[in-house]
Length: 551
Image (cartoon, rainbow, N blue to C red; front, top):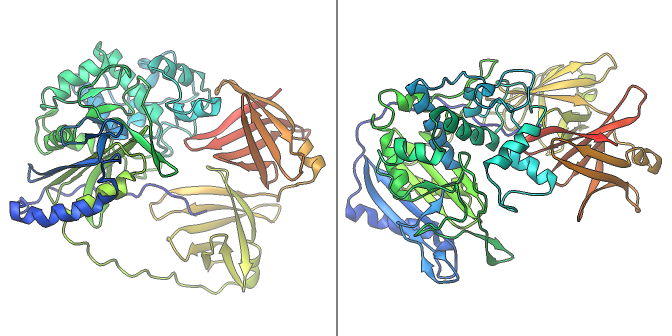
């Protein structure tokens, strides 16, 4: 039940006095260390990365490793144009904030003011919630994949994105109650910018952001067939060989900014001045979202506000096709780092932070972990917590078992008792609060160190006999995903097979009563009052409980 959530961080500290600038002599050992960090991509036959670093507002490093075009032997250079992936979201957010300052919209506008063709979700969704990924909007790319068309498998534009979103009848959660990253939020925001400004989004951002900041090499992939001089191709590494991975979608807002590390450093420099938006604009874009329960999240307006090794940092990373990107500002260190890669095997945050670390003060020693205090409780208060529980967000099961008088998770982490109904994970700091049900079993809440609370419920073990599995066999359709699937019995017994035309055959393995685990997500069947299976709900990354009705 350990849930990975964004860490809540303090606001970025005020800018400190200028850090000592790197001299030419001082940069030499740094360049050697950077060569080591990027060595895996420093080859005539490899895709690679471009790095730009600025300190105290001055560019101190611009380096490139690898090839922009492997087939033609064209090297990456600091001037190469690559895609910024989700780093692009901060530009979309800035466009919305500029229009708010113009008085053309407000962040608390309900989405239907600008996109009336969207369905009624039964509760208002605001532009502010879209900016902070707290809207509950399901991710359109995940829905397209369920339909059988994962991202970049067909050419599409915003008309298609809007068509998917118009089909969605439910949200992942009540707006404002949770954080859940979804590209749909920022595609819709780009559409709002167009309707509020009366201009195409690429035109508005060029006039209001790129030209004023001197970002002369930046544009959007609004037409995937447009020729872009100096653009690097993107690649994925499969079985040790590089393969072309083209971005063929004509979309923008959530991703798809074509840019250079030099332009990204100009953008970051604007945040240390009032050149963009005027006084207070930076603070407004870095203001973190707040949930309806008062919990502050680390996501601001297209930016994460967090820390790295004790240093405040404002950052975002990104991935589109084979492109990878990282952009970060370290306000206290007066440091900016921009990285653009065309190698799909790059972990952008790991590599970007590794490069940034060469310019930051040494990390302070980590405080030793403190084991939670163990309270004495009756053995029965431990024994009766054993069982199978289902996370009510991910629908993933977690079994607790008693070993040598200790309540243990499947991962091997002990839940240390604090009282008969409160336990603390021996690693990670999560608190698990058990609530006894009338049937004698327990439901529970997992309270994370970031003050988020995730609920889970006790569930029955699965019934795996052939007769029980036969009760799920049938045809199921989703209007939202525009697809129909067949659930079939497996000839070998013990599981089900989900089939979707033309060639998807997915094993569904029993996880708990009416719940099955398949590659990519959880499938939970729903029964009516008579006990008959009437629908199936699918939960995967960025989509929860998508409804499939039994035909």
